[in-house]
Image 1 (cartoon, rainbow, N blue to C red):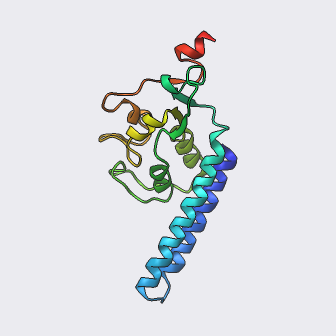
Image 2 (cartoon, rainbow, N blue to C red):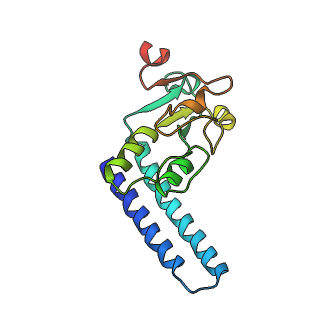
Image 3 (cartoon, rainbow, N blue to C red):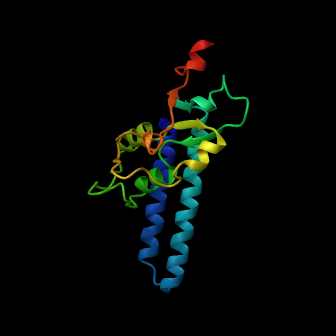
Length: 172
């Protein structure tokens, strides 16, 4: 996770430097807006690449009963417990509905690593379960460093288990 944290920090710092250059630019506003969006999208692609690289190495991994590797002969989708767009916005200090009065994330690598270790979890779900989850937000009232599995408890709730702890895994 340390290597990924450094990568995230490097891309975040580059993003902030580029945005500062654009803010100080004398280009027309429309061009600045276009370039700002391009920089944001490029940064998001780099962040997603880091997150996807971490998926296979994550120590904390969960799955629903229906998506259990011992039970399911069908397809499984990998879903981030907290949507990546929220985590990435938090890293870039782009506020959202879950942020409230939360101060900007410091430039400290320890703070960034704590954010990633707490929130960057993968859950295996069936494609049908994946379709029912809110893709880009957490439930109302959720807060940072709160329950990362809150999306799975919302509504009817999905039963999920830490890898190895579900009835099918334990029976093997």
